[in-house]
Image (cartoon, rainbow, N blue to C red; front, top):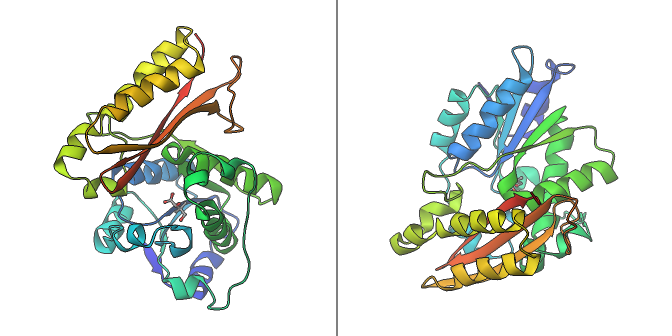
Amino acid sequence: MQTAHTKEELRGLLASMRGRRIVFVPTMGALHAGHASLLHQARALAGEQGIVVSSIFLNPVQFDNAGDLSTYPQTPDADLTLCKECGVDVVFMPTPDVMYCADRSMVMEENHLSTVLCGASRPGHFAGVCLVVCKLFNLVQPTDAIFGKKDYQQLAILRRMVRDLDIPVVLHGAEIVREEDGLALSSRNVRLLPQHRAAAPQIYGALRTAARDYAAGASAEEVRASVIDTLSAIDGVRIDYAELVDAETLHAPACDHRMALLAVAAWFGDVRLIDNIELVRA
Ligand code: PAF
C-alpha cells in the first residue's frame, strides 16, 4: 500500500495506473467496520487488475458546527492499518491546506435534494461535501466510487452532482452496516454516553416496525408518527427530523408504486445520529 500526502504525490502514484479500473472510497477517517465493508466491496469490484484508492480527509468545509469538527475522532494509524488489511492500494491523506487554497472562492451548490432532511438542519453541509468529493474525483479520476447508504441523502446528492456535471464515474451505494443490536455504525458512536448508547438501537427498532407497518398498508403519516412516538419517549433524546419521502427525490409525498425512504436524525445528548430504511408496499 502506498500513501500520498500531496496532490502531486497522488498524481505521481496514479500516473502509471491509468487505464485500469480505479475504485475509490472517500472517508473522513476514524474508520470502523462500516468503512471496512466499503473497502472490501471496492477490492472485489476492482478485481486483481484494478486499483483501490481511499482518501482519509476530515473535510472542515462540510461541518456546520465547530464543536462537531473539533470532537470528530481521528485515528490515522489505525486507519492506515485497516486500509492495508482491506487491500487498499493507494491512500490519499491530505491536510486542509493541501486540499484548499487560502483564497478559495468556488462553491458547489445543489438546490433541490439538499433543501430537506439533513440539508435543512445543517446549512452548507452538502455544499461542503460536493466540493470535496468533486475535487477528490478530479484528483483520483476513479472509474467507480462507493458510498454507504447510511448517508442516503449524501449519496442521492452525489448521484445528482455526477449526473448534472457529467463526471465520468459510476457511483455504487453500499448497504448500512450495523452493530448486533441494530445501531448503524458511525464514527460518532464512540462519543455516545453509556445511557444513550444503550438507547440508540431503538432507532433501528422503530424503523423496522415502521417498514413492516408500511408494507402492511399503514399511511406515511401513521408510520412517521410511530417513529416519533418511540424516539420521543427516550430520555435525553431530541428528534431533528423523522420523514417519509420518495427515495429518489427525497421530497414528500412518497408514491405507493415507488421506493420510499424513512429517514431519521436525532440528538442523543450532544451526538447527532442518523439512520434510514427503504420502504416498499407489500
Ligand atoms: O461520508 C463521508 O465520510 C464524507 O461526507 C465524505 C464523502 C468522505 C466527504 O468528506
